[in-house]
Length: 148
Ligand code: CA2
Image 1 (tube, rainbow, N blue to C red):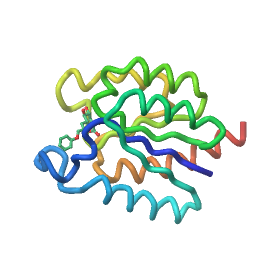
Image 2: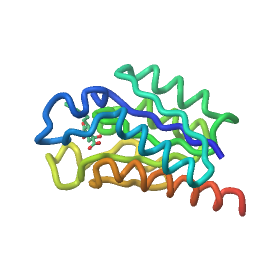
Image 3: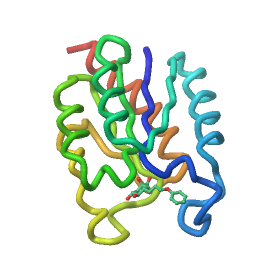
């Protein structure tokens, strides 16, 4: 099975800015941990980041037939992007929403996710471990999809 990991705006700054909020782990550290767990579970991984909403939309559209599951940390676009929501709904690839922080314990505007209703589930609040849990959830979602 193949998993497409998508990371939204400013996540390229992880570990370099605001360590008090997002910690010292870099996106490269996260990618390495994701690849290690995916290898154990015999899953392939493509891991991407963009600050551009339209590029994320393009990648979601192109996932059809190429990936079994999409995992997305849409960052700030989580709370604003109807375009990402429409792309996830249109592509029909099971999608898991993830966040490093517990978005429900932060500012009110972070409690609303426009993509949650078109995702199969949400993992938030576990830092790098949110990504590892998402690898495991992807395998589960794929097995469920195959048995239906
Ligand atoms: O907790 C998460 O994973 C978020 O998706 C992170 C987003 C935020 O807008 C969401 O509400 C929750 C922000 C990502 C920006 O990351 C930075 C990293 C270092 C320095 C500045 C921003």
